[in-house]
Amino acid sequence: MNRFLIVFLSFIFLWSCGGTNNTEITSPTTPKTPLVSSSVNTYWQQHVDYKMEIDMDVNTYQYKGKQTLVYTNNSPDVLNKVYYHLYFNAFQPDSEMDVRSRTIADPDPRVGDRISKLKPNEIGYIKVNSLKQNGVALKHETVGTVLEVDLAKPIKPGEKVTFDMVFNAQVPLQIRRSGRNNKEGVALSMTQWYPKLAEYDFEGWHADPYIGREFHGVWGNFDVKLTIDKNYVVGGTGYLNGEPKVENNKKTLHFTAPNVHDFTWAADPDYIHDTIQVPNGPILNFYYKNTLSAQQKEDWKKFQPKVVELMQYYSKHIGKYPYKQYSVIQGGDGGMEYAMCTLITGQRSFGSLVGVTAHELAHSWFQFLLATNEAKHEWMDEGFTSYISDLAMNEIMEQNNKNPFKNAYKAYIYLANSNSQQPLTTHADRYHYNQVYGISAYNKGEVFLAQLGYVIGEENLKKTLKQYFVDWAFKHPTPNDFIRVAEKVSGLELDWYLTDFTKTTNTIDYAVKQVEGNTITLERIGLMPMPIDLSITYTDGSTENFYIPLQMMRGEKPTTATIIKDWAWAYPTYTFKTTKEVKSVQIDPSELMADVNKTNNKK
Image (cartoon, rainbow, N blue to C red):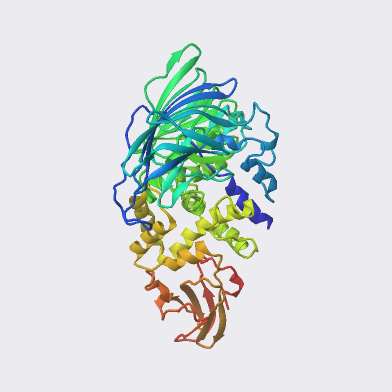
């Protein structure tokens, strides 16, 4: 068990955040609409434009903010209320995040009971002082990490409204993702720091409290003016417009970020700022503290060309990165992805810098361009990211692993054989254990993709990922949207795969039941169906590969193996004869099928 816990913990520290510094302002390609959706006849999504003016006091860690938000209701529904996230309110004693951490059996060690011990000048908060809709004052109530707002006038379909807000806030002592003075001495890790309008989509409002997991946001444009101590170096989402304006001991930086669904920044007076150009791609920024050891600073320099290779790998195998910059910033509590950047802790070895950044950079595709709802479909962003980053690391770091996903399979099979597995449809905050969440989201999510390659063929999987990006970048895809792309690419029926592997805890277990002469009998023990790859060695020493199609797929993957009759799921056994006497039989020699008991796969 311990080795699988280590696998889990190695993934649980992988999360990311934001960065900037490019004076050119260009907007990524705007998504084409309408688009056929799995959920409604015509795809739609809301749009929001933020303008914010922020004045940060680096001595008290408090800031004042003005926010003008233009909201476009692209839905077919009349909206009578809106909701904002006030994420910093989670960092207060007796918050849901605090209580959950103190009551779950295996709390995140970075949180533990630390929130309960915060003093008044160490807590986080966002206090909304006033809020207006088109100039009319609104009634609003702060309920934990959510602001509930009664509208003065309903927002009709197609209508735009302007919300003007004045707020003040305090940066919490750094505990989870956000905050001040992290364990490496980074002054400000400003993630999920502003009043953020909740997402409304075909499922309704997503005003989830901030308890532990990740985020969901509305696509739009950001215009942020940040006033801060003139000695602080700032990296954040978007592009820096012109030179900062300096007045007395403060400077004002003006950032714009087109077509994103979040905005992050980090600041410290001791940041070193390096840049490197990706050929035919973005400028990469690196912000790391001058207080790092000589070896650590050397490693930060050394790993920058590897990030160039990673950017090129993902752009080639998923879709071209559309923005003009990306930043890797020392900060936060491990690794956490945000728009155009990541925050990672910096006191790492060279290999760890590359590995964590490989994962967080991949999130720029699987979450920040393909913006799934991380609370409901956490396995899509974490699992898909783990899949592609394992492939990238295997190639770029020359690991030469025959199966780069081996550890993910081990962790998933461990979970599947435990009594703790919950379906991937479980809300990210409502797993019994943090470990179960981690293995489910990262490892089982990764196996979902790797095993899909087994089901439809590796080339079809590669085409599916690229087509998924073409169809769903700058949108909010769901699991069904992804599997429909795979069906269209492969020509196979795959609803059974999505249903059994993500919506149930059914497991795969096929066995070689009997071998007599040239007659082979296989058995399905687990409830989940699969097509079968079979390798046979004959008594004369020759070998032959067979492929048994799954009847409900209504077709076969491309294969060089001998294709024999379909296996209909309801039949527990399958018997066929070969032309020669059989010495041994091996089910799934590639081990890309997540069979939970491999001891019966060979006879």
